[in-house]
Image (cartoon, rainbow, N blue to C red; front, side, top):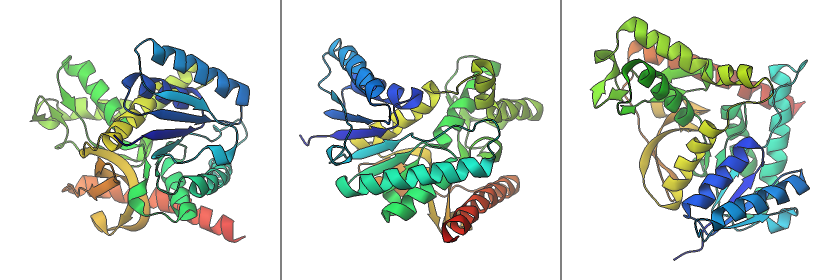
Length: 312
């Protein structure tokens, strides 16, 4: 069996939760953790290692301080970045995290030439675009975790209305307000959502889904969601490490699909050992096409700002 190694850059709540769950699943041989907080990262590696030992997991967890030792990974997950702070505009966040992403990806490319990148840092679509540009890798190897999270939130709010039935939700486009829920593709026990809930109930679900992350931020007062985002990444890691070739909504660069080019957004992809094997082009309704176009425009605005900033 081939030795499988996963690297995680950024060991905050999301990064450490990913490492913990991945270690317990016992589906890779080694996890490398890297963060500016070296003692904290060492502590996380020790704690997760001890948890993994309780289930006899074969996975080794290593804390890494030197760039050259963070190497030979099959997959690298990047959660690093700064949250928006008081007095910081969205553009400030964009430029700051793009700079961080630029530095991280430059180091990853040097020592992990065959890796697949999973981006979690925000603003997500723009960060995927930045990672693609810096790495110069093919689009199948640079993927963002986006639609899985919104889809899981949508499924949660549907269940709150109908009870604990099997729900398969599908959300495309950007994260939050720019999400594009596919109502016909969202199933309750195999039945289209619009045959289960009325229009008002669906609109209520969608509004709650858009604000699902914000509600958690308000309740925590000093933090944001991490279990649900981490689980989204775990599903992607499982698909790649075990070559599942499952369909998941992820952020990738479009090259003509859905009628758009040179932009990153959330779309259904077949995910396997080579990364994004194929983009699944769903038939969109007129309303969904309008929502998708609006989402694309928002991402393009961010990309244009990045390009303008880099040329100054």
